[in-house]
Image (cartoon, rainbow, N blue to C red):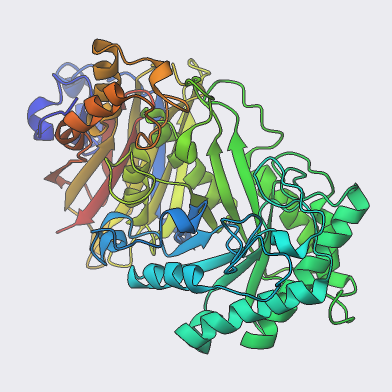
Length: 573
């Protein structure tokens, strides 16, 4: 549902979801204590969550944590762009996206292999890089950089080209020099089209989840490890031969669960092993990426590690090997599955449509800030696979967090009433160079059915205006909850019209709806109500001027389950 705009001061006492501001009450003089006690209002009950913010205690700058987006197969979504969408689509819709990862970009099956005749095993150099060039061109036209995550070995390079779970060739090439030539020719074609300096500014990756046997398995643990390292070295050497030293290249492991072989072995190979191509010590490595998934949006996560722990597994191995200046990110992840659809329970785009996703994402973002994790690559943010669609609460959270990029973290101590043990409430506070303060806070429950509203009190000190304690501020409050989400309307319409899980291919909890509906009835219902859903998904903010008492301000709000609030406090006098 969509709430109406309101002025905070007028309706605070009557709204269930409310926000209010107040300045700390003055401390009465000792000589008048008895007199004032009789007229004071009763003391307000303590908030469920109290956040104390000191703007004078600054920390690190906030960087863009959502810079990357994944493309499972660029041939299906980037060759026909602009697809009626303007060149500023990303700038206006997802301004935080600075790079698109073209996964398995160079092969693994006949749809991905970049040849004129992918299944002609008699001709090994009939390269056709035009699809990849077109995809890169369309990315650049959107103002974002392509990332070439090289794919599995093309079918024609492996006499044993058995396909695995992900429908790609599981085996290494018969001739690594032939594979080197392919990588060299691909890089050369990109440089001829876009120029050396442009392509050198791109990121490259070698395979997806390299220690996952469902992606790559040469027969046994040791053989697979050696084959991957050899492919990595030959790929990096081919790219360096065209671009020169200093390329941005790395690799993506699972790490959230154990793989066929230990990714730490690969990290040590890059740091101190003998390069299979050059014969010298070490391999170029600028970043390490992992996958992070929770199994379900429930109260008992089944992942082996949490997100910080997943990243720490590869970071600690790199540091131990002497690699101290790498970047660390999550190349794919969030939530694997929800309620089962007709075919499977997987979540499309790996996000639920329920408001749960807003607090889940805010919580991950705070963890990334606290643990120096550089980026998280998302699968999608709307009801469409990529282009257009109804925005999700995940997109709202991402866009609001992006406004904090470039600000500096400040001290924020959160004390949570432990009465509700299932609640995870926390906050991030920052300050801009111009003195504007920002807060992100969330009411997260550890399962989808969590329904506890939580009261928050934010006590802020140190708000300055022109070097003096502020006396007044412009307050902007943006709440991401069911009133900024279309999904409750969509679920209600499904129930009213007899749309069940059988009308969906994958989980009906998926925020991505386009491509997930398997019946004409369900598709007609969604399309007929698009305007309503777009209106329901609109994110609104409330703005007013508030008094500040000598640089101090207290903000109170009650957040329903899984809601996120963003405050902007701009001193004006």
